[in-house]
Length: 242
Image 1 (cartoon, rainbow, N blue to C red):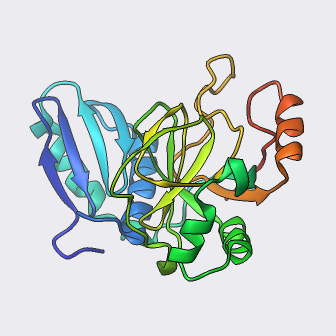
Image 2 (cartoon, rainbow, N blue to C red):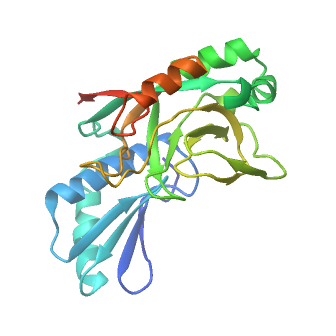
């Protein structure tokens, strides 16, 4: 983990930020997931809410943050949080149509990684990535960390609009778009996975720490599977793992 971390910083007057790194780091992100799970299980007095990001855990406080700081410091000292086994989570298999109209920048992205489009699809679909954080839009996941060849810069300009379910790539991460929006990342595929669906028992489908594979399917199979899925999981399947 990055030298000098973890550390606890105030965030306004009603929250503390437990930081494990100041940059994208696999060990730090795993520590965030494990530490947040421990916080939720412990239920510390004065803790109102927690949320994890790529490298930190937000702890919203009821009352004085100073009263909770000592308990957080004690919990940080109990373990090497990057080495703690991950809590129980889901492994998702999400159908994805790569290339063509569903992934208009696949060829460009593959070339930047030094691969043919077919090699890129094979590599990306075999990658078992982790939900690093949710952000930008409700339920929208950042997933990684991909191998070094995918450490590709963002575009210098914006794609004016990608559709909900677009799978985009940059800086060793996927983002699965939860809404139609502009982006500076390159679109390599399309799913019909609903990151947020208020009619589901669990409206936000993915949780930080979940694992995902984007399984290649034809555009026709993608749409047929999604049409038969009343919960807007886009034909995805999942299993509980620990």
